[in-house]
Image (cartoon, rainbow, N blue to C red):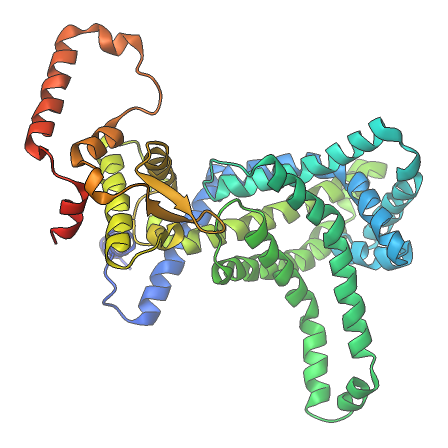
Length: 440
């Protein structure tokens, strides 16, 4: 293939990837277009280090928090007659890519957990223990929020209840589900069905697929639960599917290439187990964050831009704000009720940080209001007949923080800016938002 034909192919692909917003193509071509954009965005974030930096920071937090986390969880599980013999297989499965070294790591971790007596720590010691555990969950949430471009965090009450449910209730639900599954599998009815084909083959197939299904289900739950935004289940499942497949594949490769290698033992001697553990924890967090990135970009594929972040632009901000206001007010005027933020975001081909910034500006100024049980819907904050278009534009064009005194120092600039503002106000006169929305 000549260089000219290769260059033409790349140009056509680039044009197809970034300049196409038509839905006239076939269904499968649309699916391929979305997947190509998602793949590009995820790889770009990996190359730029946005995901890897979060994964590296979580390695340190994990090493600091894993023993307190297990100690708190196990103190609850012991009340339901769950013993180390039942906890050990789960940890071994998690560290299976470490091979024989995983057994050594699990034994050491469980011995550390045994040495922590939650009941005799005292109020200060228990507080430090809980803080160490909460810091892990909080850092995971911050990493997910960064991927999802979420700037606002949960309230203190929400974080407290959510974190406790993850730390205390989560392990209990996992063990309950495993116990119920073991009971069903061991029942007489299932044993008899396994002896009849094709039920025996199906049981064998699903048994082999269970590790994949469990990790995909766990990742899907995390992608829906942790980010402080509305995540659609189908996109969370897509991210969980990608991350789950990578997890199982990476675990197999890690066992063969890294954990089974004698080079680490020869170079690091007694530290080899620790070095290999660090590498696997880093890869585990990296895979989890890659899946979160896949889920985000799959849900917001129309917002993927050539650059990682939308470049600041007064025109983009103003047009985005007007688009949001128009869609919300038109929907309310014609159909009533609010419009979902995630539904609206899917139609706007700008960066999510721009959309969120303009939503924050419109809600703070009293033009729009959040509604719905999850505060994920937008409504007009007051009657459309009482909102003037010139006031709307003043809000959209206003700075989010006070202007620096240096910008007010030049008298000529201030006079020109006032002339522009007056010209805009004279053109719009007393036009209301209701007139604008109902004009088309």
